Length: 110
Image (cartoon, rainbow, N blue to C red):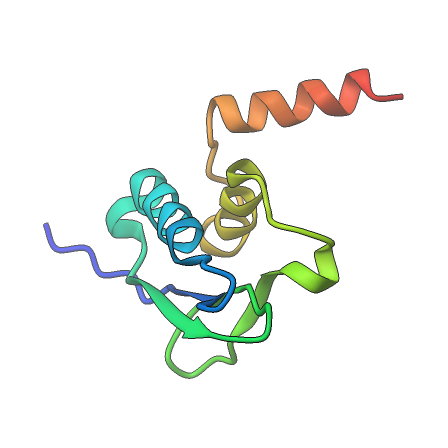
């Protein structure tokens, strides 16, 4: 059975800040979790402290910002990034321990 997803992920990272390894680690985490459900995960060199994760659901849709370092105040936990990708890819998908940990934090942080 051939499965082809059109969801593309693009990770822009600052070369001057040496964030290539961080960007590559996020790419590895997303590919390990979603595998062939993703059409592509690309690394895009940038500058000026730029770190941003974008997704495009299909070729005829706009790129959507999933995470922007300056706006969000830092880098995402891999759990947060995976949940944001899942919410675009398949909102009903259960991420197992990732979702359980988030639910537990939500009930204990009152």
